[in-house]
Image (tube, rainbow, N blue to C red; front, side, top):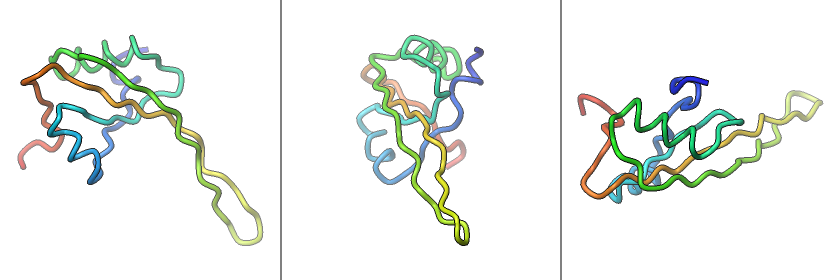
Amino acid sequence: MESTDILLSPIITEKSTIMGEDSKYVFRVHSRANKVQIRAAVENLFEVNVDKVNVSKVKGKSRRFGRSIGRKPDWKKAVVTLRAGETIDMVPGV
């Protein structure tokens, strides 16, 4: 897999924005990506040094479609901690 296939999108919420002040950034990643691949992808795309990577699986919520009940798919997220003094500009131009 290439770097752009591993990192699907950044997760920009109030909590992840607060974590960004501590050099922690949250990404939605490919479900089969491991920590080594995620580290390499972030270092390659953003040209920063990664200190550590924490990964967790998020269960999809159940949703109702008329009479039938379905589920949203499960997905994987990664919290990437950068070395001190390094940042990633998640929203360019702001």
